[in-house]
Length: 189
Ligand SMILES: [Fe+2]
Image (cartoon, rainbow, N blue to C red; front, side, top):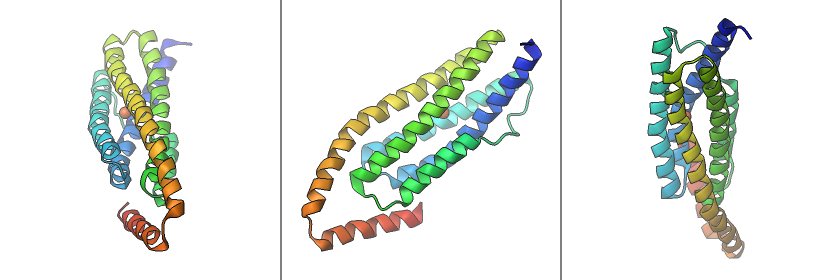
């Protein structure tokens, strides 16, 4: 492949990631708000701060390239965020909702890991060593976030199972309360 074409493709992929990260900056506060567990909410809030840093690293790369980061819409991220919003709108409560949110968040992480893996390989081929080191830092943070989510899922999934068992024995009044709480969250999201 001619170097110039690979460079164009590289810039295209970076623009896609830039748009994806910016979409995520908007979506993560909604996911944090919808989270039931404090740990999960903190995790989303922490990742929001990291994500802002990912946007900045991409801006640094674009500056070095002398290109604008704008001009692409990441349809993949749009779809993943859409699915995350659908999860928030579902009637799942408590740990079950959290388990669903983790599933949506991990899809996002895996998508980003794939995207950054691609641009890292392109940057290496193009000899852009400074870009490679910036991309590696972001890639590492995405992987760590994914691992943290896996650990959280182990706790939350077992809570979700016991809540579901308890729920079967609960009276109608308390389950109605849960539903109402979920609905108010829905409106906020
Ligand atoms: Fe990111």
